[in-house]
Image 1 (cartoon, helix red, strand yellow):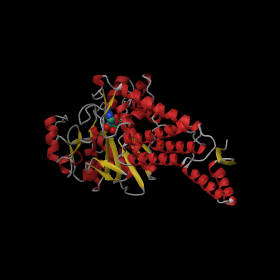
Image 2 (cartoon, helix red, strand yellow):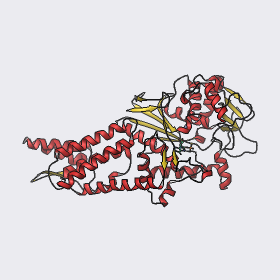
Image 3 (cartoon, protein in one colour):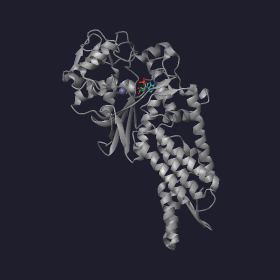
Image 4 (cartoon, protein in one colour):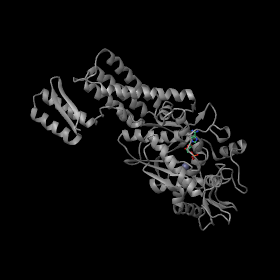
Length: 480
Ligand code: AMP
Ligand code: ZN
């Protein structure tokens, strides 16, 4: 598989470090409902995981849940987002975090996003975070101010690499653009807190440490959690492009300074979803949740199809028209699956059609394996649909043609996650079972009835598929 790597700024052949691909995704900050922009990030990481699984890789996917430490200003100033939400909702920060984590997981399910192997809350990993801070302290990377313990970014060789800049260039550009507000006393504008001190009266979200009572910075949780579950050096790290300049740069600085090893091989960043050309933001009142889209007749699958119709490295624009088009196209695909799966008179496979289906399916996967080019992959799927429609209007599909088409569609859906199988009247059958059906037909053609009977039994026992020999050849069905 080829993947664009932000670190090298080019598409590269993906090679896993070991037999299991290890992926980390920056998870949600659970202080409010996830908006559909956030959800784009998780659709992208899930699609990547699914493509790798289709290539037969075993994947270990870890995602954190930020329930402490993410400040309102995104940098090292301002109040914790969770605490602010807790005050305005008259709840504890813990209640707020648990509620929005629950709602986030429901959205993930609605979007048919596979649950990561590990979902790790920051507040459940304070000991690991403190061990990492201790390591950095012992190595001389940290300094103390009256607001917290800070990382001196000038001490990490390579700070700025992910953004394609030298340390000086990055500092100059941040100062010039005033992109980051700066806590007083910091040595460099890029320095950030790994531990922040809490006021004495603070009762919630505070932990004792040898540095003082406080809570962790936001960046340190991702380093500590990823290293806890994936090791010091792993394959892929995902997140939105907004994290390239600061959050991910800081993760690299902390992790590599502590271990002396390379942290991540591939950095995969999704572009932003905008609304009518503008950034989604509370002040512009243009934040949409999955529930909001539902009220306008857009299903979670319709939204997912919309996301997949764009390349993950392109900015996408959410408009009513584009969402309605996506919903309509997806419903057309569902109708196609229903129609084809219900069709099929007894008969043999159409060899020309088989070739067209296989070519379209192979193209689909080669686009997917080419830096997850989902728009081109979807075009290949539509080419398959057109080929079948052309064929079906001139002559009828046999049951084997139908199974072949549904199998190809369901296989493609293993990376799209759009629930095609639910729309297939006859359930697709595993490629291994299809192979046995074909082998049995060959055995019969060669009059090797003993082998044909053995394969018939194997199909029934291993796959629950009953094969009967009709006048036009064998017909298979599922045992009920
Ligand atoms: P957050 O909850 O703010 O930590 O963000 C969760 C994920 O959503 C991160 O990977 C962000 O980079 C990503 N993200 C935030 N806004 C957008 C957006 N408008 N479009 C795409 N991804 C986004
Ligand atoms: Zn992160």
